[in-house]
Structure formats: structure tokens, C-alpha cells
Length: 360
Image 1 (tube, rainbow, N blue to C red):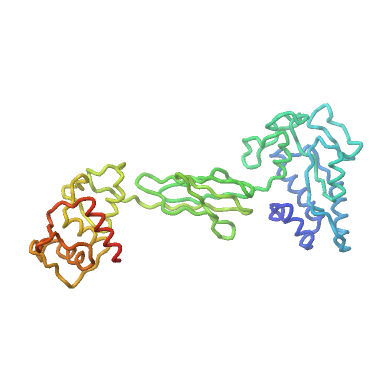
Image 2 (tube, one colour):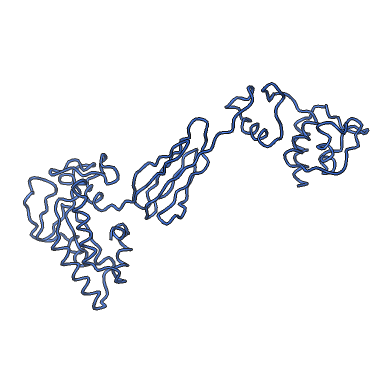
């Protein structure tokens, strides 16, 4: 039954018309829910059980007869306690009107009754609706249902707090880091922010949000912050963290733009640096080094040999040069020479890259 109370008014209306539940059952469930939680929320000044159940019975009778019903007939509603409802107190949350009993229905109230809306109670408000936090009721403060330490806003805080349908947000425990959500529960359509914080030496690997059925909820990332829109369901947030790749070089600063590229190159066997724990980021590359980096990144061994007089068959770059020639990356510098120790310009390097990837 609680799951049905969490559904929208239109979904409840559909359930009533499909005879999945009766209006009396739905109204009783609403009243029981109010009694169970309103001591903490302070959302209601009074309940109007008899009036609500009489209306609900009329709805059930019409459904049984197959009669047409107004759109939201049978769907319970709370009425702000500054609107008259015959036979109930209308206090405007003021001691002045504490015992005032409505002698007539307000126009809006009468229209609700004409449309067979069960009015379950009178909702708390700032006294005479003068306020913006609902802390100014003469009877009790209204608390935010998502965080009891916060206000619900006003002046209609009771209507907001008592009528809210919130779903739990569970954040799973994680190793090597933690995740937090901006709320512990929220109603459908609320934007939730998720923060993932890795421990030192770790980084975020995966972050996902799933609904009660295990289906993924779309996450949006912007500037390192993750958000999702709350569905009509409880959700679970789960983050996993992986060890950050270590930087083996003393001359590659952690804030260097090329740090990740250097670590990637080391992890993929493209280079091991220049020795003594150094990468030498500002050194120029030779032609031999350039084609070797490419070969180790994307190349494959070839059967042919490069016919250059300055490329020895046992040199570290012999296979790379052979691959580069066979794949149209370079033809050397002329006169049977490759120029392995010649400096490689930025223009030459991007040309090598362009030709290599065209041939993939």
C-alpha cells in the first residue's frame, strides 16, 4: 500500500478506475500514513476522517455502477487550514481561530467536493499565511520531510510536507574512496548531486545509480560533478575506485599537462624514459625514437628489412623503421639513409602520425 501512496495522483486515479484498489482503501491508507509520521512532520492541524471516508464511499459506489467519474475522484487531498470546510475547524494556524468551526464551504473546497476528492485533513501553515518558512504557526513548526532539521518553506509548509512522496537514496559502501548524495531521500523529478571522493593514491573508476529494479538511472557529469533526476523509485548509488597509476619520473610534475600521456606510454611499453628515473620531457626526439614510439603503440612486426645503410639490423629501432617504411610512414631522408639520430621536427612527427593512422 505504501508503494501506491508514493505514486502520482494520476497513477492513483488509474488504479482506482481499474479497480486495483478502492477509494476507501486508498483514503484509509493515507490517513494511517499521516498518523504514523505526522508527529515528526507537524504537517496537519487536524484530520477530517469522516468527511474523507464519506466522499470515498461515494466514489466506490459510482465505480461499482460503472458511472463516469471526475478526473481525480477518490484521490486523497490535504486542504490548507485557511480554507473553510463545513464541520471542520479552520484555524489559519492561529490561537485566535483555534476553536472556529467552518459554517460553510469555501468556493474552492466545494469544487473539490463536487469532484469527489476525499479531503483527509487541514494542513498547517504560517499563522494567517504570513511567513515563508512555516516556523510561525501558533501550534507547531512544520519540518521538511527530506531533512527534519530543515524547513519546508512556506507559508504552505504543511501542504508541501504532508503531501510529499519521497524515495530513499542509498549510497553503497565503497573501498578506497567514498560517495555521497546531496539528499537521503527525494521526490520524483528532484535533481540529486553525487560526489565521489577517492582516497589518496586512487581515482574514480565507475559511478552508477540504479533504481529498485536494478535499471540504470542516467548520470550527467559536468566539471567533475555528477547529477541525476530522481525517478519514482528508491535508488542505489555505487562508486568503485582504482589505484592511480604511479608516476615513475622525477622530472614529470603531477600538474604537467603531459603527465597522463607519459604514464600511459610507460604502461603500454612505448617508452621507459631516458634513465636514472627521468623522462626528459623537454628533450627533442630523434627520427629513430619517433618511429619506435609509433611502432610500439600501433605497429606490427613485418618480415621485410629496411634497406638503409645507417640502420643496423640489431639496433633497437630496426623493426620500427622496417614497419614505418612498409606502411608508408617514411622513406628515409634520401641517398639510402634513414637519419636515425637526426632530430624530428613537430611537422615530421604529426606527418608520421597522420600516415600511420591512415594505414591502420
